Image (cartoon, rainbow, N blue to C red; front, side, top):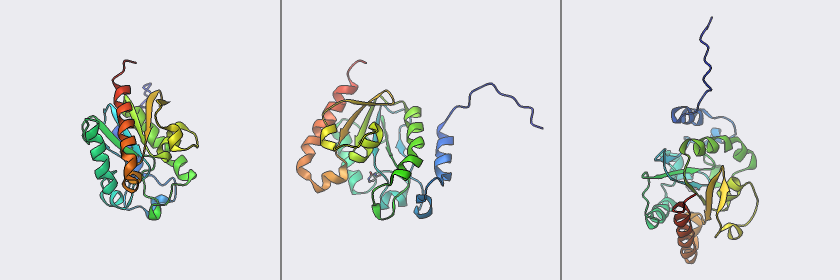
Length: 195
Ligand code: URA
């Protein structure tokens, strides 16, 4: 008989979260993934960048944004005065790769949502940057265009959210890079404002 009684509320921690993500079988993506891609970076970061879902390279390496789009994201970080791993945490809405990089399905987002929430709670960032329409709509619980979300400070989990283009989109639409840089400027101004 186990007589251990604890009145302490069960608290979350990173080990437990990573363990839960690795063991997750909540949707069918667990059948096709090579491995889960939980997230990477400073676990007490001021900045949290959120993308859509791992691609082929991320699925192989177990780290978000390590392919071509990731190189551009690194440049976006540098333009903001940031470096991967220093004051920055990078995660995706989905922790597993959808086959052939198809769009995530609503049931996959719903299955994965609690992991993102736990990451946000554990990091408690000062600023979230949503990369692309998919991350933005998931975070802000709406279904709208990226252009209508850009240029404003939104809020999710009590944290300011800036919406910008997904780096993979920017690679195909280079002229929009200037607009992404404007978004990052807004994010920088927002984090520097006293709240
Ligand atoms: N695209 C994403 O949204 N996330 C990644 O990790 C890689 C590409």
